[in-house]
Image (cartoon, rainbow, N blue to C red; front, top):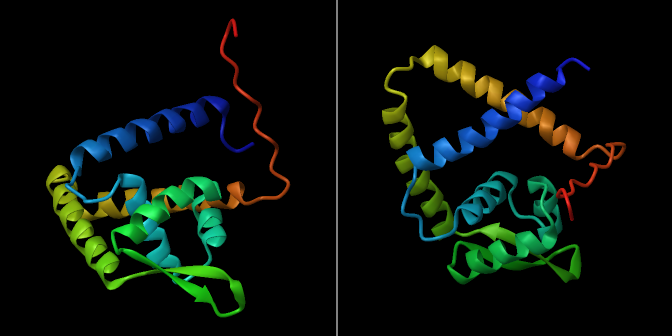
Length: 159
C-alpha cells in the first residue's frame, strides 16, 4: 500500500475537521438543508437522470436520497419527468429555480471562502483544489469498485 495506516488516519481526521471548519466559515442562510444542496449540485452536474443513478453518484442509499429529493421537489428546485426509455420510471432534473439557488449559494460561499483565505495566493488555492480533486477521484473510484472489501462492522465496547 502506498499510504501508511497512520497517514490514512491523519487524512480521515483532517477531512472531518475540514468539513466542520468549512461549514463554520461559509455558513449561509440556504432555504434547504445542507445535504439537499449537495444533491442539487450533483444533479446539476450530472444532468437529467434517474434517482438510482444519482444515489450511485453520491454514494448514498436511495432512501437517503429520497428524503432530499422530496424536499427539493416540494420547494420547486427539482422536477420529476417521465423517463422516455421506461414509462414506469421518472427522471429528475434541476429547475431554473434550482439553478438560481445554486448560483446564489456559490456566489455567497465563494465570497466567504475568499475572505477566509485572505492570506493565501492563487498558487496555494490551485494546489489545494488539485489535491482535493485527486482525493475525491480516488475515493469515488474506490467506492464504486465491485471487488472492494466489505468494511468490518464497528462495535461498541460492552455491547
